[in-house]
Amino acid sequence: MTIEELVAAARNGSTRAVGRLLSLIESDRRSEVLAVVGHHPVRTIGITGPPGAGKSTTIAVLVAAYRGQGKRVAVLAVDPSSPYSGGALLGDRIRMAAHVDDPDVLIRSVATRGHLGGLAEGVPAAIRVLGALSYDVVLIETVGVGQSEIEIAAVADPAVVVLNPGAGDAIQAAKAGLLEVADIVAINKADRDGADQTARDLHAETSAPILKIVATRNEGIAELVEAIDAHLRADDPERRAARARAQVLSLAQSALRVHPGLDGLAKRVADGELDVYSATRALLGGPDPG
Amino acid sequence: MTIEELVAAARNGSTRAVGRLLSLIESDRRSEVLAVVGHHPVRTIGITGPPGAGKSTTIAVLVAAYRGQGKRVAVLAVDPSSPYSGGALLGDRIRMAAHVDDPDVLIRSVATRGHLGGLAEGVPAAIRVLGALSYDVVLIETVGVGQSEIEIAAVADPAVVVLNPGAGDAIQAAKAGLLEVADIVAINKADRDGADQTARDLHAETSAPILKIVATRNEGIAELVEAIDAHLRADDPERRAARARAQVLSLAQSALRVHPGLDGLAKRVADGELDVYSATRALLGGPDPG
Image (cartoon, rainbow over all chains, first blue to last red; front, side, top):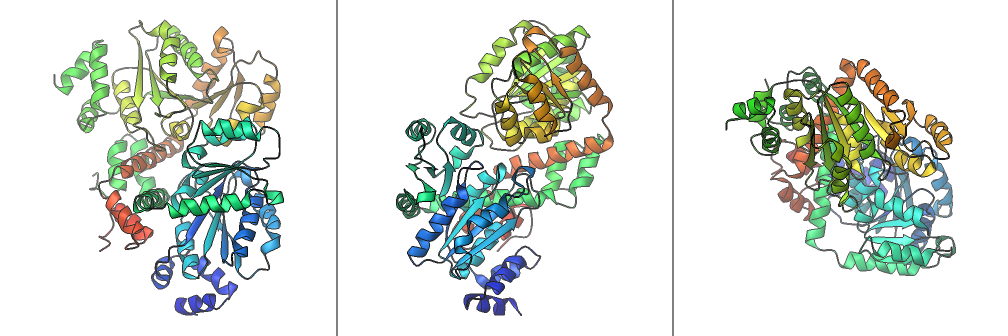
């Protein structure tokens, strides 16, 4: 099948064709796929937070809420291939089981090939393909901890940080830089002791709206959906440019890590033949350092 | 004064000239300075860890240990300009007061201009200047938390992670990626309960040597110095190349953040005129995206 035929099949409901397209954008045929699908902005919501906070459960109830509005929903799980997140993906998939037979819900994991830092290269393309295939909402879950949770802010708007009552999660989220990128904070399991105190503590750390939810009982989800909608209504060219800027920087970092000249330059720096600044300029396409 | 004169004055003991050279490498005259000072490898030890772990106290006793060996020591404090670390630098300076009148000890902070991620641009150059000025040891302390603590591994060898007994610090260090970059782990305040258990927990997470120290009482510091020496003796071209690679990548990231073409490319991506991959290629010196 040509890419045009795959897109047509995907638009006619073939989940196999969707999967094939999402695989092609991880290959050297990415630009072909992007040229065919064009530019179809799609609302992209990031869900991140410490392990165990209830990200997957929150996503499951958000999927249900958007399906209730008749929207088609895609979930991308970004797997940072971290030793700390091993196995989590399977558990997340099981929790999403309620939706796996719904043809209007797509669940897909995106590999990150062990990148430390840098946006998973396939994510912006996957979002564009999903937009072209008439998905109305893309939910991106970052599994595990670390840099990928921050990078998510480059593609998602809003970035929703899910955490639990108690000082531990709040401090951890602050330290990981999550509160700096949070557009909305959802305190999940808010029926537990300390939720109000956690909300007060967080108000001192972030100007983002702070909501209390109990995802397993669907409590506070309507309010979360409304907060997401309000954030989307407030989007403007400046915010879009800031996200694009972060995406470009992040993809550049990922590309430089696999640059064919990098190892040779590094060896010359290590041997004292070249200073690290000249090597950096050479890596960035400057003149041959000689 | 010319740069040659400044270097001569600095070598003759003028701390003012040293300060001037370290300021010049933060300016557009960096390459001039580097050309004059040449390549003088210097042992560079990174000290990082969670806030309150005792990094500054550990550095103070390490400085005393190296001074006892007759070595000249420089301390660079990397300030990530984070809201979470505000004011910490002053406190660190006070704790270093025992050494401020010693002409063979230099204490200097390096600005990072609020970069989120990316090696502080001046750090590799500062290390080279200090090597050229006959400092025998450079200790780099990262103040605060976040990406800069990981980037330190690109310039420091070994990277020493200082933390306290108890699960909190160990978990936090693991989550922040510190254990992945640790060459040596020092459990400070090891006279407190739980130090042995923390050491056992850490052995499961890292293959780095784990030492117990009480920096305020100088306990375990001789062993820490020996562990640092052993690590340095084991250095090899492969490790040096890996550090150079990480430095080049990190400086490239810092440079791209201030690239003059970035904002224009980001705006075109945000407006749907350009896809983010073409913009990334253009940023990296590829063909004009048209």
